[in-house]
Picture 1 (cartoon, rainbow, N blue to C red):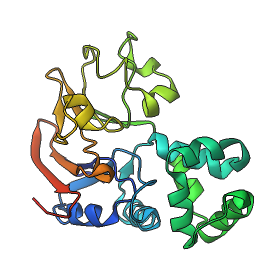
Picture 2: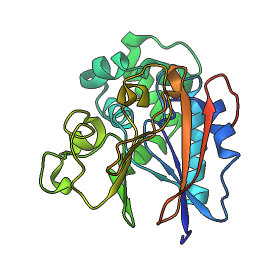
Picture 3: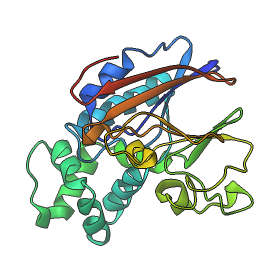
Length: 241
């Protein structure tokens, strides 16, 4: 698929209504979709988000880079006993309930995982297939960031790509890339907990996690290989811009 632009969407976290509103701005003829990770957990309907994104991956070759929540869910499905505490501490129970269509008993985690695997046989393979980053021209798309204390960003650990905060956005960008990332809500980056706008460092870091599930915004950027062409966002109240 050779499209000349990307339509890049920030952290979704199960917010299907906001996602669908944002997708109304997408031009599939010209723009390939890219999700910056964290598709589920905490939001209104993680099941619907997974099903929609799976459809977009199959039918439109949408790209999804792996987020820490996607990784936690993958690990939980592979080894629920070992990974349940971390996943549930980070909002995973809402995803399990959404996929099962009921309030699940936490003690029945083995049966819950087996039922999810049987009902959604494509889900674990999808999670396992997600790349840690995606390069496109001078752009690098990654969920959390890269370790900018290292000489070569490619030497970042797998953990860094999906979890890093300090060591990335607080460092000078010495790569030759414009790095578009999610994970850290932009209000934190702005130092203003009411500011969910996109954050730019001035030296090529662009944060697009607008805290959609925290009363903020879900952002999308339309990028050509030269510049940001357009910027859309949906506020948590459902207002479209």
